[in-house]
Amino acid sequence: MPAPQCASCNKARAALRRPRSGQALCGACFCATFEAEVLHTVVAGRLLPPGAVVAVGASGGKDSTVLAHVLRELAPRLDISLHLVAVDEGIGGYRDAALAAVRRQAARWELPVTVVAYADLFGGWTMDAVARSTSCSGRSRSCCTFCGVLRRRALEEGARLVGATHVVTGHNADDMAETVLMNFLRGDAGRLARGGGLGSPGEGGALPRCRPLQLASQKEVVLYAHFRRLDYFSEECVYAPEAFRGHARDLLKMLEAARPSAVLDLVHSAERLALAPAARPPPPGACSRCGALASRALCQACALLDGLNRGRPRLAIGKGRRGLDEEGPPREPQLSRPPSSQPVPDF
Ligand code: SF4
Ligand code: ZN
Image 1 (cartoon, protein in one colour):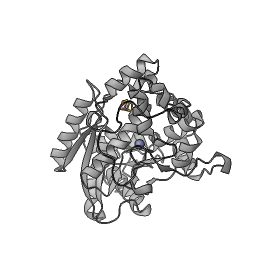
Image 2: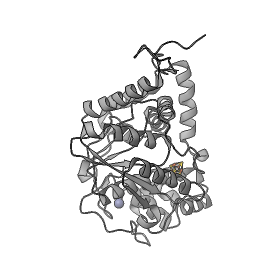
Image 3: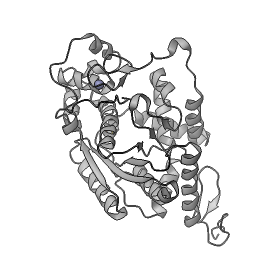
């Protein structure tokens, strides 16, 4: 049976059915619709004002590649300029190839690119060194916990370095739904309460941060990359199989098979959640070491580095964190650069 006609242009043959709506579209109409939906997300949410200098968190993977490509298409209409910021976590055999993909993209799109490295920012710690340290303590599964916190900080530092006014990341709807599920499964009410919305407005002097692809499904991100023939890096990080996120992903796939709207429903549920007064985290103050926003004495990044420098990485995770706050000063300095004059958030 021949493919149906595109429901938008009524001329070309349809090349796909949109996963959520079932609408049959040709490749050109799908890409135009995808870009229009991202434009709507940005404009309706007032995420990127005219004149914004936008640091795009670029990993070389499909999400950030699609995000950078779409924003580059939309940049004249939005009146924004873009700068790719890539983070080198120091993961041997993985990150070098991904960074090469970022550099190829930057050259093709004629966009500036800056790479910031964990080793430079965090007193010599790379993710490989963190993994060795945490595996000695039987916590190799926590690599992504360390990496997520440090990467967020590194991206903020990189964005400041290039004079950005805003930070964007490529998280899609599936990523956000997984995060909501993980936070539920861990009973992490604080993160659940902070996770809603399309981004954060820049609390405590931090750069405003947003996720323009947050309402786009992973399948459509892949389809967009396919039809636009984007070159991206698709290998999985060596530490990913250990991550708790994998369980949330599997669970989400089962839920989506039974109820296709489960992904977006979860994303929207996080936006509408309200915590009971007793469960609300205390208002954040400033980290006593680096000045970042922190709900305890130390921000998450300093707490994790503190535990690593003490040779007790477990201290900084979960309940052990309390122990860190109560212990004395660390044996080694933490963030290797002087603290910013403005506090930056650690979540
Ligand atoms: Fe970092 Fe985990 Fe992602 Fe690897 S999978 S880059 S360790 S967050
Ligand atoms: Zn700190």
